Structures are given as C-alpha cells and as structure tokens.
Image (cartoon, rainbow, N blue to C red; front, side):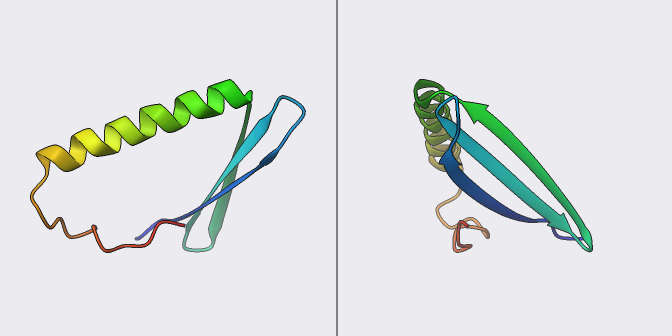
Length: 70
C-alpha cells in the first residue's frame, strides 16, 4: 500500500513548526515538530546534502524522479 505525504511549515512560539502528514489508506498520521529558525535552516541543509549525495550515486533516471514533491 502506498503512503502519501504532505508537508506544511508555519510560524510557532519557538520559530518554525513543521507538520508532516502521512496517509496510508484511511489512516492519517500527523507529526509536528517545533524548532528555532536556526534549527530549521540546519535541517534544510542536512536534507539537501543527503538528497544530493543520493542523486550523485543513483542512476541517471530513477523511477521516482518525476514524482512531484508536496
């Protein structure tokens, strides 16, 4: 069964709130993470670097390359 993800970012008391919504069938799970703006920027750097490293090692046209990012 496929899992669909949605991401939302908004302000919070600490700086930024990231909400990750995953749906598998009829089950919806929401995870929210509050962080400072500095932590959010660090998370973005880590994710970007990880994706770039994986893309550099992957074949030129992986099957999921055309999927949109929510």
